[in-house]
Length: 523
Ligand SMILES: Nc1ncnc2c1ncn2[C@@H]1O[C@H](COP(=O)(O)OP(=O)(O)OP(=O)(O)O)[C@@H](O)[C@H]1O
Ligand SMILES: [Mg+2]
Ligand SMILES: [Mg+2]
Image (cartoon, rainbow, N blue to C red; front, side, top):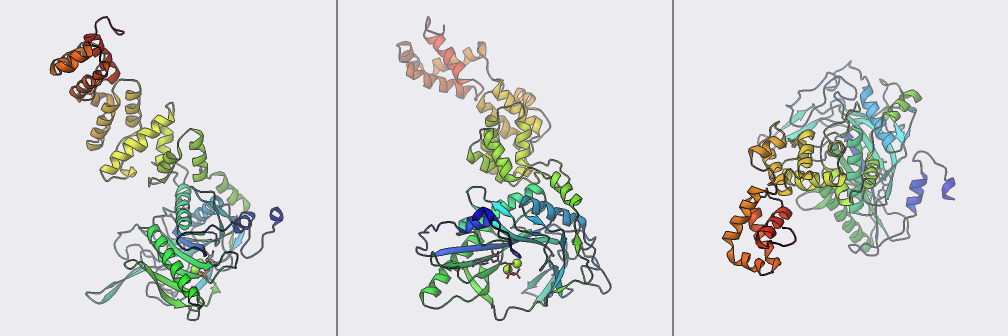
């Protein structure tokens, strides 16, 4: 019975995982008669100021070569690792957010291989006893839950670059030793789209807990994708692993290309052999790196310099209590406020920096900005201004939300001016564009005055504009006088145009009626 399923080691089958295994097969028109299974290993760089086992600073992309390297990162003999507690705390935040089972005792192993960007000749990882096991990630825009197999801490490598012109390889150790979390999923995805959704949901989750900035383009999140193909109802096929995919788009293309390759191998009567493959971004196909037979022997062994990591309940509970709101909780809350799914998608997917920093302080995130703006204001009005106007105008200017120059006070006051009829909606938009083009600390009300954008109230100046419109369009005015009120729209349009949007359409229409139809309803 499902509810009684007992977790088993080493990969704990949670109830969610078991329930998911029972997912019904849905035919995909791209590959009718075949079922696709995808499991993903994500390497996420831990957002810590210093490295996993040394005091050297972690680096942003673009930092000069070998700028941040300690003697330990360069594998000087006699240097010893010292575990960075911040990296552990951030991995714990991730584990708790993924409902993973934090292990009270975990250990570190050496994975040996020879490569020029790995000065020690081994990488420290957690092969046998990872920091967390099990867990689940609910995909944001579907009902699907993907099981998590385990989360392990490990070191990143350096970077080697081959300069073909000068025929030299350069080694940059600034990245060497940066903390990574390897998050291994269960094979629970069934299409390239679900894989993409998994990665995006995971990115959102990591950002919300502040444990990684999860940026694939900048290399702070990298994916290895495992793909297999089987006939529906049969057991899973042999998996091939595609290494080091650095964009969601390429990952989807790599999965599709691999699925077609497996199908053609199987159709030709042969069997798929387990391989590690790469993805060629130009041709859009995967290529063989090595087969299972020539897989390297990593000679795993416990690292003798690192004692087991023992975590007491107090430390785990302290972190659990300080957990910020998670993306699915945010979505549920925004839904209750009456926001549409589309608006929620936009708001929560904006690359806006830190929703919540490591110390729990609110950053300049889009949802935090929205939350602060909607205090005392209609959330639907606020989200409209944010998603349609502010984001729209930022996008036109090729700016991200991080570069939004409008303070909360300025944006809030702009919304209030429009809501209270001090400026019209169209003047509000003009003002917003002006404030984006000329960032300053001036408040919108002052700027509206300087730019003559204050709404024309009913009275002399509006009447003046109406009189001018009547003089400019005598035939239309006559038609209205004869009772054809439809033509009022044209005259109203004229007034709006000459007022440069500062006239309110309804007031202008009323004023025109009063001037043209004496004794009419509005006189
Ligand atoms: N039949 C399958 N089809 C697709 N994916 C699978 C299948 N079986 C397992 N997987 C996925 O393969 C991945 C295996 O990752 P794991 O880190 O455990 O081992 P590995 O790839 O052998 O080791 P390494 O970390 O050295 O790459 C998991 O994400 C798992 O979900
Ligand atoms: Mg792995
Ligand atoms: Mg792997």
